[in-house]
Image 1 (tube, rainbow, N blue to C red):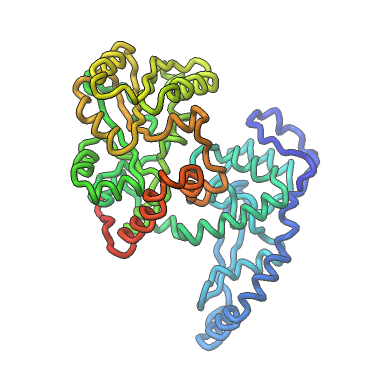
Image 2 (cartoon, one colour):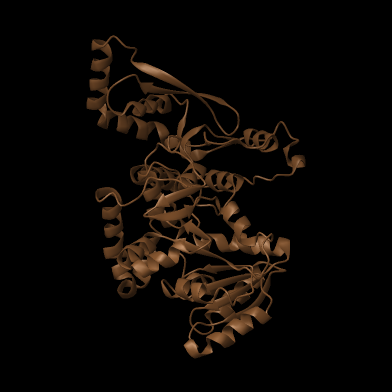
Length: 431
């Protein structure tokens, strides 16, 4: 546990005391015992690596030099040959040169923030960090500074949990992020996916350089969408007519990785909505909520209006009025003069509705958002962050609605993985 809670403030006046009391990141006290246990477990592998190095007349270790988020130089050791060469870093941990969890190696903090952290807490560079975990899974709900603050304020249980989640993420997603290629568009399962960060996706949605008379449409596609599009050619054709397809979920991340490409962000609608609301407040743009059961859109609008002062939600309509009310609903949406329409009716109904009526809509952008309103109305709880951090949010949804979600997850997820890794259905082209 940490003796005093750390608060990473960006105000430079907070960093003026060079003699600030340093607090130990207490999670590091278990590094050496765990590293020793792992060395003993991996001893046969290490002996093999040592034997190979001797017989091939190589140095036992090679060195890799890195710089952490506090601009500190770090030397990491690895075996020069053999199996699992990176496990030599366990010796660095035993010697106290580096820790399992600590200051990230994958980005730099601002100079002011570096000064503050260096003078407030004793924390070694870590091979794992909360920032790296979120980077690997594509979660963008906190800034690097907020992630570091949360990590440094964690207790021993949080430290062990971060280690466990990091190991799991390596098993699921692998380590070779830097070797993956990047592209603005990816062709996955025959669909052109817009490869954006969360900020870029929000910018596309709120961009005002297109007249309202030309509504642009965005869909979020996930493993379930891919399964539907393969079994239903009509739905596949509908997806191809969108102006933008955003990759949603760990399944799409795995598919992109299989194709050799890095997804810049996990653009799921639930994580995106707060970013979108902030942007709408800043740019004075309005939203319209259409869909879900009676009362759900209203409640979601109330919750978000309270959370984001100044947010303009131009109107709401539930999705249970029947097809005979379609024209009336379209008229209501257009009269609201909203900039962005969010429609939550589930796939493939919501996508079909938007494509059929896009020429009648006068909003700037329309998005199909699935069960988004259910989450923000509070009628369905969001998965705990630890499940989201390892890409297993679907387990929570299955627990909440086992009958409704059985086919989607219990049957659909293995089918998606089969198509991705065994059938090779995922494309490798870029646009």
